[in-house]
Length: 256
Image (cartoon, rainbow, N blue to C red):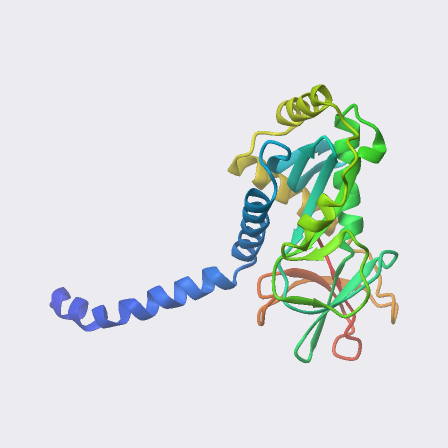
């Protein structure tokens, strides 16, 4: 068989394969997270004076039960801002005290961990590392996608560039220049090396932690919750806990 003939026959389909590959990457959880973090980082560079707000990004810190990853840290005389990003679309329902928030996308509903609680661990890890007043560290949550809040959110939960207004609302200096420099140095020396291996180990220990909770039960019907992966829609590739009694019970819980 003449291989060149086969090659010529399939060559027109290459662009289809490239488009399919590109769409797969754009829809992946990895790319969405990367885009959201890059968006927040860009907004900070454009709208916050670089000489007043020093940014450190993608910070992995050791914790008693493994590691924790912080998307962005902004250090300034007005405080240290710990930023958690969520790149999501659709309607978002939640409150400060709820353990689970809800994302409604068209006719589908998804549960995910309250990002304020998620960021609380990041704040505590930073508190353990730094020698600054506890009130100088602030938790900030940013939704970077086309999300719409359908319930009243705390001031530190924002959409898009709204987080800049929240940060700028702190106008009284709480740290001097020496404390700012010391905090920056402690974060840089205390963080794990920001490379692929660090990220891989972090994901590995997260997976082990989640799978160790496989005995969790459904809060609605009491059945066992099963770790699953979404195959379709905007959340394709995301892992979640689903009730084993599905479709009779449709309870889901986020694993992040």
